[in-house]
Image 1 (cartoon, rainbow, N blue to C red):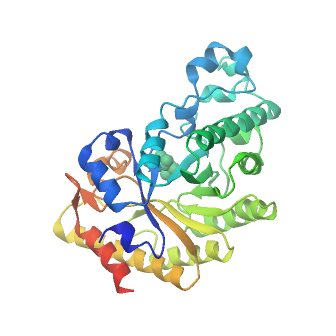
Image 2 (cartoon, rainbow, N blue to C red):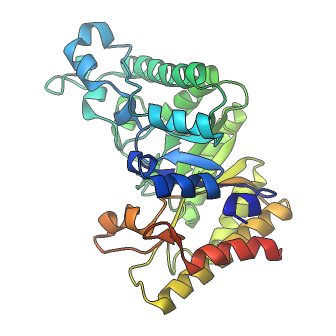
Length: 341
Ligand code: GLA
């Protein structure tokens, strides 16, 4: 039994992977064995698709129609196609990992910021180019896109260059363009972190999801789910899941991990228990029709490759596999939970 087979009746099980994972035979085996969805950890983000050299060298040609490069994304698209594992596209619009020059007139950071019309032209052209490339060269490989990532912060729309140049309807515009160019059946998601937090949950529902739903532009809510060992509480998480679920959208858990800096056996046991609780909650919400969860993705493959050690500045042991792709107690717990139900 593997994760993907055990969870097949409920939802896809995914992992965020890097180009190094795809070059490491033991990790490739693990991916093929256990996972039914993949996300490129970094290589399909705006900084990876935007062709800096070409745009900056010829701004007169590309000012309204940014050039893209496809070499970063290609290995993932090929691997996914060749192995029949669908991809989540991550992500089209984000304040982070998007080059600053993208927001300036003529891509010149010594000049002025682009105005709304120029940014909307670039946004449409960028989304169109990326979607047309993946859909033409790799039809059917990408089943969902995080169209906008992390637009909410500190009780409001996040202060970002997107907000500054376009205004808060950059979210709606991004989804309009994504809907216009996405192939039928490709699901469009809004994705964010701390989505169980009460104010953020309510803001996302009211200011992002509902306006998008009224316009028929969104198919799903992405709950990143970078969790701590004691936060959020499971009740808080369950409430949020139900509230997003009640909107009738698909739910993806897009970036699951649980920061844990203590590798002792006891602590890894607590990690397993917390994963157990979370997966029981997810399976039960799905079974009871409370939330249409269709995909659950772990953010990274192994403890050793987790982004958390860098981000938290302490070694983290947050995942189901470690070392040479060995299974941890948490792996067996996650498997067991779904077979019990
Ligand atoms: C956010 C982003 C991801 C990734 C993680 C950290 O959650 O959505 O793409 O960058 O941060 O790795």
